[in-house]
Length: 302
Image 1 (cartoon, rainbow, N blue to C red):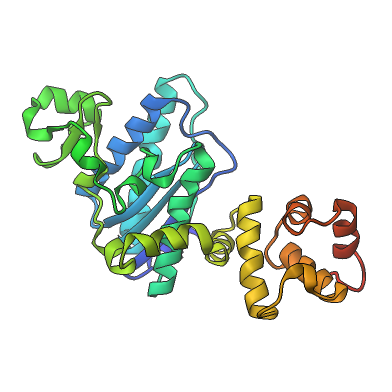
Image 2: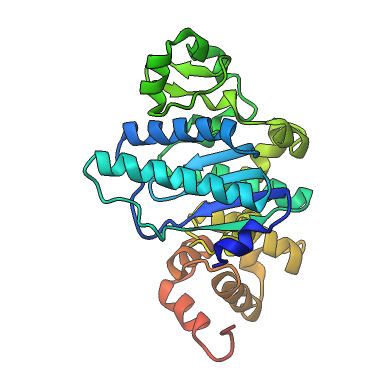
């Protein structure tokens, strides 16, 4: 983990901020999610950063940002402070003072594509919904017209007292910011800049294909962030297709010599961290046999 001083000297650029997701629950209910959504909306006016994408998870936060390391660090401290205050008010375990984050530079178009997808795919882990249906973040804005169906009021229609109550702050937001009247939440289309997303993905089909098929990209980002990877059988199947195309073009797994099958199983297990029981279901191989292969002297890649 880099220290605060190291992050603060990072030059202006694109960064993926991922907070610690292993030690505390940040959000227990809808009210706490809404509070953080409004916190991020407020932060968009207070710090010299551009928010390109973000997702709130039960235990952590992902954000794709443009700014300096110093401004992003200040942003994180602001979010952490507000989450801690909300948890204390709710009588919940607060965020510890050493609750931290990781900052990964995203410095080319391929990386941007992968990080956009990674943030969107996190929604799949949170609830049984698509990224386009997850409201705690900005992923539902991508190639979507859902905003036309959502009723809203503008921030300038509220009194100073009403805004202070909504934001729990004397700070305010621009009058054109949209507020969901029912949830009392500032809508992310008010402050998330989607321009970079649309420059990165030429059309909706390209984006959907990346969401479903770019398993390697997902693994690449997870390793950068130090996140645990949980594959579904569908994910592992897409990964196997990629590996088959690269290593054994024009072949099918079932037609490979046993030696090659064992090598592929071992690659999936060691290089891509696919669980043995997922491999077993993916390649239709007995679980015990998969375990024997990956732990054998011949095929182990330790």
